[in-house]
Image (cartoon, rainbow, N blue to C red; front, side, top):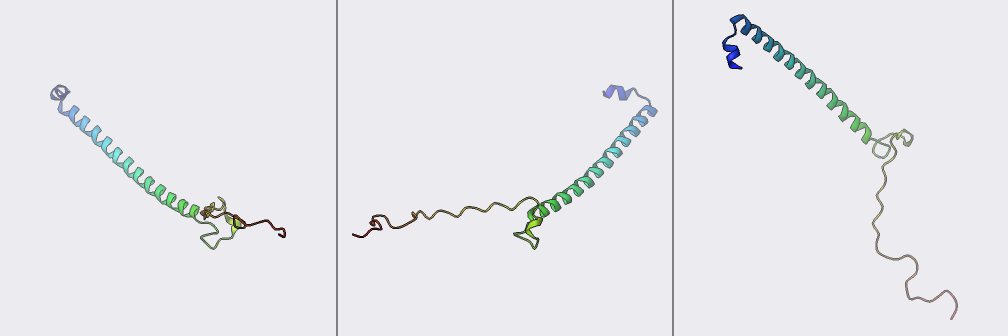
Length: 95
C-alpha cells in the first residue's frame, strides 16, 4: 500500500488527508454524543433504581402506592423445639 502513496500526486495525497480528517472529526463527534447519551442513561438508571427501592416500608408513602408489591419477609429461624406439652407426660385423664 505504501507504493500506491509513493506514486500518488500531491493533490491526491491532500485529498486523502482531508478525507481522513473529516472521518476523524465525525468519529469524535459521535464519541461525544455517545458519552452524553451514556451520562443521561446512567442518571436515569440511578433515579429508577432509587424509585424502585422505595416502598411503604422504608418511606412515608401509603401502602396503596406500592406498585411493585411489598418485599417478601424472611422466615424466622426455627428454634429446634417441638410444640405442645413436654414429651413423656401422661394424658389428660384422672389416674
